[in-house]
Length: 428
Image 1 (tube, rainbow, N blue to C red):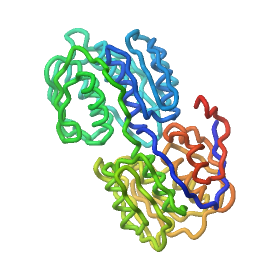
Image 2 (image 1 turned 120 degrees about the vertical axis):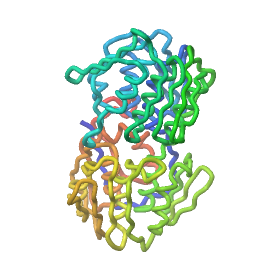
Image 3 (image 1 turned 90 degrees about the vertical axis):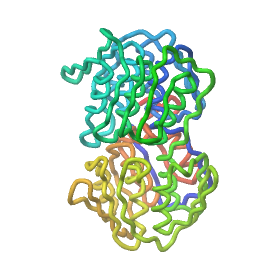
Image 4 (image 1 turned 135 degrees about the vertical axis):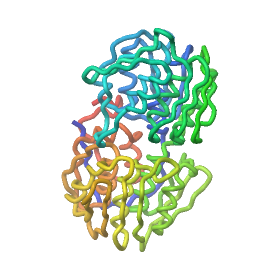
């Protein structure tokens, strides 16, 4: 099991370049199997999730090659095969193969996916969409079987009961090659959904309305990749480094950022009093003093992202007073609290979804455990701020979501090492 060892207390400075968005990449790779030609991506993050998705592709006889941020996928030799349950269960986003395989073959059999333990994350809205398109869905244990081979997928109107990024993308993947028009209402608006739609449209799909409340899809018979698709920058990685720089930096420039994707987040940093200069595609964070407490409420995009409530927490320790976080997306997303308290932080959660964060004068190194990606990111930031050595166990979770973490932190002056994982191949 991987662990990250940080010798804290050293201010960070310099520049860091943000990689491609994890939450786009993990949907783009399954989407690639819908193509009738080889597909190429660039700005792909070097994270464990990519390697796990490549492993799943290989099980379907889909060749892929990943090097230096460039990923090529050849789905022209794809075969229907049993997918490796270990890889499927290692990441939640493997459920995108449900929609992609349904769109490609009209049927799919997939083990119920795993990923971070954030409490209940049902896929009922995904299933609602698949059934509306004409698929029969059966569940036996943790195996889900989808079948639309009898009559084929046919366009339909689907209104999501709750805004869901995963369901929005999965229904798009299934509908893009269905007969007729599909209308999906009450959809998620995240930039990653626009990225998926852009990729598919560039191959000949007909998707309109991505980024709005309603998406309209007219099915097509063929998808052909004509150019390399560049993955959008990771707004969550950018926000993580912004919090790190504000908490313990002597001047850090974060490059390859789309500031418009972070407006709800940057508004909170500015409200706190963070020294920030926002450029066209970069953000400079200067040393911050006299920070003010804030109230944060996570919401679907364009609201404050749930994936950033944990990374911002160590910065809140520096505010003069009590900050509050209301987690409306995943109320049980609180696995970082007990670990941060081991380091001397003052924070608590008396009710699900409600977190109180108080000024914490001094953090001290400790042995802690990363329960999931963003909780692990909070521990990394706290470890950098802390006096002494912090050992973060179960760090594989963090490597699932943060591109070239060791190299980027070292370039900013962080004293760290990662043990128990092959950083070249990113395989545990």
